[in-house]
Image: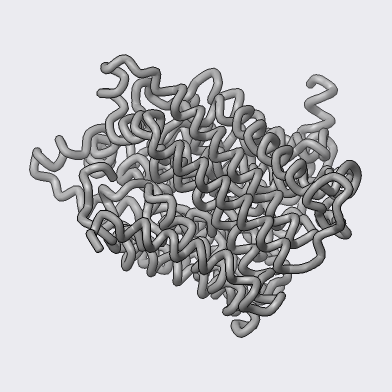
Length: 315
Length: 296
């Protein structure tokens, strides 16, 4: 097999394995993998923003949580149709990003980190306080199971829900991948690497930054709806700082800018957290902190640094 | 005196006390950012270390000034060691972007916060003020805790000392020069590496001292680290990065907004702080005292 085809074969093999998972594992494991897929979509969107666009956000839990609340509220009060919730949640995430991004993407570097962190905290605070809508600190419990189409049966089987989330996450990640490979993606890399030069070439650098912020917001919102479809419960913890930090960790250990690395990173983060947390007796933050420190030193380029073919000049 | 002011004077003084505590956090964040371009997310956890030092040495109820001085000295020692350690840890990451530094310091913050809650538990710990400051004094007809006035005095003294150090000494001039143009300072033969370690240690010492000072007012509990960190970041953004007077001004503004907000508009208090930040950023993207044209 030539080296050029190997990534395609690996990707195809991975897809087959992903699709067969519900036939091979128990319902609990399928549920966990469903959460992995939802979180992976969040991480891939953040990778497009941070890795390709050069805008590392510490507040990506905000559109994620807004999407989750949107889906849960729709499910409780309006419609249980999953794809409708998905689209509405993506729109809500994009809407939040569009509202705050107008101000945020004018900042650079550390300023951007601080401002996104602040926005994440405000939205978290809002979820805590706005009890009439969000249920306050108790969260929204009793979200009904989704249906796949209007009038369809509620999806109660873990495997079927997994397939739905897999299809949605693949569609979302595929769209993000297309964006990253498009002319727009190359513009983003240009702005990330040398904004001055892009500006002197005649690009308006504000617009691509703003657009990628909104796209990442939409991906996070969609991921939130997938998360809510599995958990069927949303609380302010879902848009807490820890979610933002874990998503960034997934991007960093996956390797910035590759998108598939972030998905892999998300899998590692969720699996480690869920598999380890019961055995640690509440010492989760300690282990998580050590993982952060270790990841920064030991995986400077993440999994994506492990090459399947010769590195090309385009990062 | 206008009626509004006499009604709310106590709240305004509270805001000043909270403001000087925020200054101890923000000035370290601001200088570390200015000189190294590092966002130190562990800063709030180190404030909490200071607060728990006060719990450890002066938390038993009959502590005098001596116990607070011991806690303060411990805070200086721990803060200097932790700051120097963080400076050494972040140095290999220079040039790898803000994300790695933020994640590293976040990891440190998680570890420190978890170790503190393992040692001191998850309950809110309160620290009584030293005996001779335990009473209250009358301000405009209201009783006001004298310890908070002492916090204001101590905080202002600290702020003046920091200002003199940064604006009026040779080392301070080097720090400001490094904030403005680090490669040029290096080209002139100054070891900016040592300077960076010193500034980092200095900033963390201030945060730890702020924790000791603030313990009788704010207490010590898991989650306080995140709260002071976020308010400190708001202060820094408001005041402009890398400037001592900016950090002071920002801290005073946030202290007032927070205290008056909690007292007058309790529903919207936390949004007011961030709303103020958004307005300032819209009008002056580099902060109130930030220099224009500096975009990193």
